[in-house]
Image 1 (cartoon, helix red, strand yellow):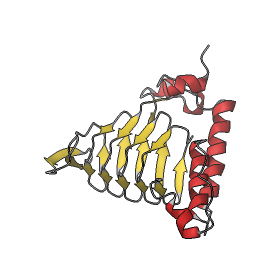
Image 2: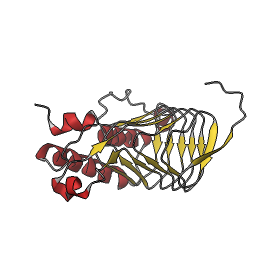
Image 3: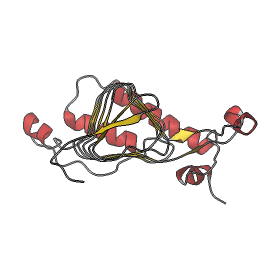
Image 4: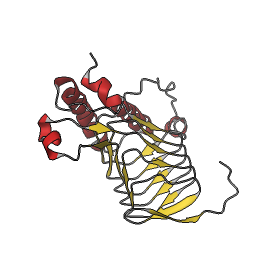
Length: 209
C-alpha cells in the first residue's frame, strides 16, 4: 500500500497528520528557524542552510581563502531573504538567479518549481495544498487533503502580497501585479492582476519563449 507521503506527492487524497509527515514538517520548521535566525553569516553558509531546507544534497564548491571570491562562487545561486515559512522543503526547486523577498510562504504539498531569474516581492504566498470542499470529508486534522503542483516560469516577476493557488502555471516572462490572487494559468509574456487575477495585456519584448 502507498504511504501517505507517496499519495501526497501524486496529488491524491492523503492524511497529513501521520508520524512521518509530522516529522518531515518539524524537520523543515527547524531548518527554516536556523535560516531565519542566521544573522551575519557568509553567503556560503546561507546557501548551505537553504539547501538544508530543501534537502538538496549537491556538494558546495571548495572554499576559497578570499571571502569576496568565495561569495562569488554562489553568484548564480537563488537568493532568499529571511524570514521564510515552508511546510516540507523537499518539494521546492528554484532556478539560477531567483530572488525571493522576505516573508514568503511555501505550502509545498506538491512540487513548486520557479524558473531562473524570476523575482518575488515580499509576502508572496504559494499554496500547492488544498482541502475538500465538503466539511464532512474535510473533518479537521482527522480528514484528508490533497495538492496540485505550481509552476512559475523563467524571468517572471511577482509583486508583493501575491497569492498563487494550487495547480497554477505562470508562463515565462509574466508579471503578476501586487496583491493579486492567481487562481488560473497565466500565459507567457502577459501581465495579470486582481482578485481573482485577470489578464491585462501582453508584454512587448525581444525575449522569445
